[in-house]
Image (cartoon, rainbow, N blue to C red):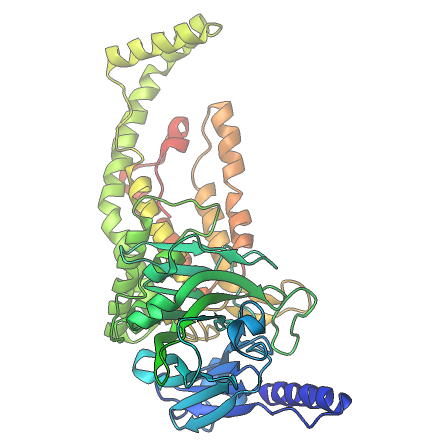
Length: 561
């Protein structure tokens, strides 16, 4: 595929040049940084026109698990991480005459110099100024050092050269779309906070902040990130603005790589370099991280704390912006615990099951105690029900008087509901939401097999293909729905007509949630199925010890997912 992309890209430039009666335009060239399979190794295509990157592949990540297992890898095995097409390189802001360069930087033909671990682009203005950009491989930190230098040979000092550095456009891989925003532009600040922007199709959005204060800025997709951070005072001082937009533009979606219009997010960094004294140069150095979004990966970097804010953004709940207190902290803690289980047994699927059993098992004593107190409360309420019905009949037409009578009745008979009756639900929600939001974008389960047909925990567990929508038969979400419906039908309906109607509707809510999550990662569904099986066993044990649930308070019995 990438060979075809390269040939199409070259032929289009050559055809344009010949049609205009010019010599053929410079061709793009490939450069490999590091050896295939090595940490932080890349395969990239650059173009002298504009002096930028056309596409970037990671040679230590692969398109599929099958591709990763090939004995000898081909370029089509490597994961396509970023694809910029013709819209790459340094872009000039303002008119060329005002910047001392004869033409816009992204249209100019740059001189190229290569070493095994670097590519350097140089552009001579012809009037004493030379602009140089070097991309230097930094495998330890999974990326590059970007050096941007402006040298003054014999021009007037003091002016500023304004331009824009266009960041990598991360490819949204086919089949990796999820409910909720997964691609964002983010700027991290020194106080540990961050600002992020959900991109809008065809709109350039600027961050309303001082760009010189940023710790890093970048864009993400589901598993990977591209983050730029200043490495010296010159780099920080050169920043003038940070914006985010989307590519490809409407009507130019790229069918070769499955890239839909406005699906890829990229950042655009406004910069200004001051023309130094003659014989000197102004230098700005940036780090560019191009790799996984993972606690375990970040801990291997020189400054592991730098990129942690991006995980806070990823742990935003996907639905309606609902943020359960403690959910984000719980997600971080449980993901670290999940990694510890994996290190212990070497299988992410088993680690998820072990984590689920640990979490649900630790909640079981509290859940049992709360259900026992609710049963005692329900038994007392059953005895007092005739008196309460009499009060309702007496004051039914006067709601205010009825409420006052009920309050007095509850005080007299001391039948206030247990304060902790629903405590298990409140304690479990941060755990449930935390794991849900974490597992949906967890890089660590990417292309990790479990057992049998589940060969990639980051993808749905397609047991077999279907000739119609949804195209795959995913067993785990169907199993979760069946278990949930079975558990709901085991709970008797309340005798109160209004509660009975509501509970009847709630019995079939799992079907809606199941269909919403049908295409979700099998890692998430494995957690949900394991949790549901635990609920079924726990419910049977509680029923055996405490007896069946009283229908009068069936809707009040706490359950935990």
